[in-house]
Amino acid sequence: GNLHELETRLIDGRIQRAYKNQWPSVRVFWLWASDLYADRTYLVFENQRYTYKEAFARSLKTAAIFGELYSVEKGDRVGICSRNYPEYLIAFWACHLIGAVPVLTNAWLPSDPLVHCLTNTQCKLIMLDSERADILEPVIVKMTADAGATGVVVLESHEGKGRWNGMQPWETVFNNYKGDPQKVFNHDPKLLPEDNALIMFTSGTTGMPKGVLSTQRQFLTNTLNTLIARARAVLRRGENIPELSLTDPQPGLLVSVPFFHVTMSTTFGGGKVALIRKWNPKEAARIIREENLTTAGGVPSMSSDLIESELAGYPLDGLSFGGAPTADILTTRARAAFPNVILSQGYGLTETNSIATSMGNSYPLCIPAGDDYNTRPSSCGLPSPVNDILIVKDGKAVPRGELGEIWIRGPNIMKGYWRDPAATDKVVTKDGWLMSGDIGLQDEEGMCHYTAVLLISSQILTLYSAASKVKDIIIRGGENIDSTTVENALFTEGVLEVAAVPVPDERLGELVAAVVSVKPEYRERVTEATLIALARTRLANFAVPIMIIFAELPHNPSGKILKKDLRGLVQREWEKRGCRPAAKL
Image 1 (cartoon, rainbow, N blue to C red):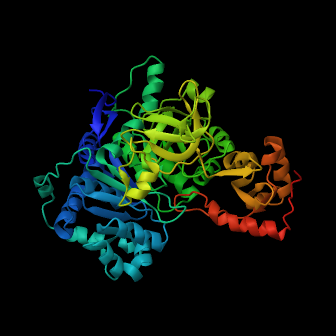
Image 2 (image 1 turned 30 degrees about the horizontal axis):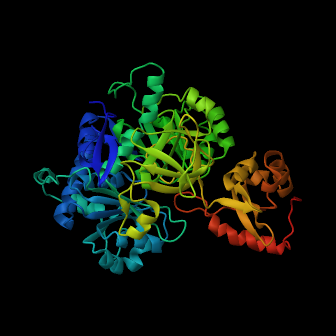
Image 3 (image 1 turned 180 degrees about the vertical axis):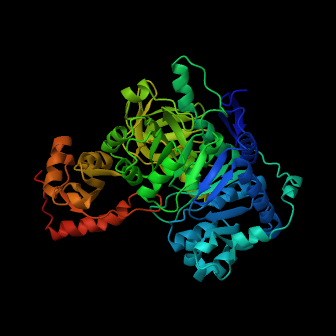
């Protein structure tokens, strides 16, 4: 039957809509994809190239090593914390071949939260790259014991010093293994849709990151959710939904964000994944051209780099803007630099296993958004067929057109925060609604509209628009001011990033301030006075910043601006100025 055929079934004690013909497990998905696209190029990294067939063979051998040498079994966790190397993705698939649960940890976390992620999830095996090995070597013995791990291995160890206390080079382990990988098939893990599949982490802008545990069904649901926008666009044009073709040109993308953002949708379409060691616009442009890639991007600053690079004019199909707020001006520049680029919208969180609403095209089968995007550029589209959206204010659902907190329900909602039922209960109701903490509205046609970009994690690379965080509102004298509206108003030529931050005020409660980073060549032209003057033309008087500071903005490992780190800077500058505004309000 059709992949998007629906059924109603009891899942975790709740009646839910689900995809009837979805793969029962990630293991089955990988067996299917690696066989279907066997001879296509899958992974490209410097001088390493693997077809789907070759990647599968390596994943099978890796799975055998996991089981035989490190006693990894069904349900055990395997921590992976590394730059984007081919062996990272191969280890991910290897886990699923034996029913283990990959714990995908952000490589850019500092030591303490990194140790927390790996020990809290009790990883049986830990896989690091050389940089993480250097960071964790002083605590490796205690960390290994606290996690209950049977081993720690280092990927691409030749890039570092080669030897670390308490760790083994993975290349040596892999090459020295002489067993029979086919034995993996002698032990079917008998995975069911409600078995554990994956642990990812919240971005951790406050406190330690929380592990988001998802089942096979929850994780795989998103693979089909990412195709819904394409299906809707085609059907509304009166055409049949195209099937996957092995003869069409192979789609390909440059991965400049963590692997777990793009793995499933890319593999579903038989796409090529090209990796880059570290972000460099010139190197990125070279790889895109040489590998004939069709999609690229990352956080907005990376997309901005590509727009201004020698790549401008290249027939790029898709450009991503995820992980941090995106200014409207960036999408305009993207259209100018890449005339063929297809824009679409979507909304999702780590806790929803990526998107729950979408509009436009879907990688890898790009279909233009058409009238929906042209007439509703601020919308994130309709909910997927398996997701329900509720807009709630003061504990009650509000009518269409009114703002409120976005609640989401469906088979892609996380199982819960790892070993933290209290935290889970704070965000998931007893009848399965995830309280996102984001604000938005639905129009009369059910289209979701939001006011900012806040994509926590996603497996589809497109332009995402999402909702303002409930707590990212500045309240000035009873007026609710959306931070992102202020930020968008300050974007002009030469401005790189903007963060609107509140300043405490005895009379009005809070005032609006902003921290701005500017390109070096624009520092004489873009001043506090010029930006405040610009804001006056775009904002209500009460929303105009009373002060603008120029500084580099701090980011967390996912690329999100750490506004809490800016509050002290803004407060000190405000007091230094004697609490006198630059803008007369």
